[in-house]
Structures are given as structure tokens and as C-alpha cells.
Length: 164
Image (tube, rainbow, N blue to C red; front, side, top):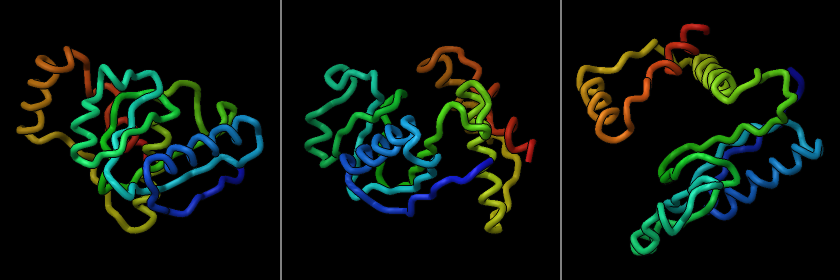
């Protein structure tokens, strides 16, 4: 699988966190950096929005300012994420990396499997999980009222945990 770089855990503000992610990404696509795994935290709460999102349409900017929540655009896609007391990670590797198969879902599955195996290496026992009755009921309600009728389980945890 080759050699990867691990950047040590560090807390930073939103601007620095996104600048580091983008700098590593740009260096990686120019073959000037090893594939990189980065763990980081947030000095202050921050809302990061995806590259293609519209701040004015999708973010209550005044509320964020009033609540002391920094706002930043990620160099990647996706929806808005509120970061606070959490551990965030970035996996940055070229599309030619032998670790990752084609397709984003398969890539996420590999990353999830690596995280699960890493947790087991340090003694954390993982059990294949199922949703509780309360979670199932809330999921059904959210699927019909908020998210439409998508099948939330087809790419679920079971597919990669069972392969460990």
C-alpha cells in the first residue's frame, strides 16, 4: 500500500483547518506530498459548507455571528457541517492510490473499514450495530417528511463491519 504521512492532531480555527486541507490536497495532486491522514480539532465552533453551496441561501449568517460560530467554505463538496467538540479527519490521496477502488461509496467503505480496524487495534471492541426501535421510527419519519424516500441502509455500516 506504500507509505503514508500522518499529520499529528492539532486544534486550529476554521481558516487554518481548511487552509491545511487544501494545501495538502494541492500538493498531493501535483505529486509533491505523500498520501496523508490528518486528525484535527476546532478551537472555536465553526460551520463549514460545501464547495458548491450558496452561503446567502443556505446559512443564517447573522445567527452564526451572534452565536460566535465561524463560517468557512470547504474545498470539497457536501452539505453544511457544524464543527465543535469533535475529532475531524481528512484522508487525502490521489485517485490512482491502490488503496481505494473506483467510486466514492467504495472509497468511504474502505475508509470506514480502516477506522474500525484501527479502533480494534487499540482495544476497542466493535459490535455490528442495528438501530433501536426509537431510531427506526425517527428514521422513517425523517425519510418521509424531510429527506424523501431514500434507502438509508443500502450503504450502511453492516456492509463494511461484516468484512473485518
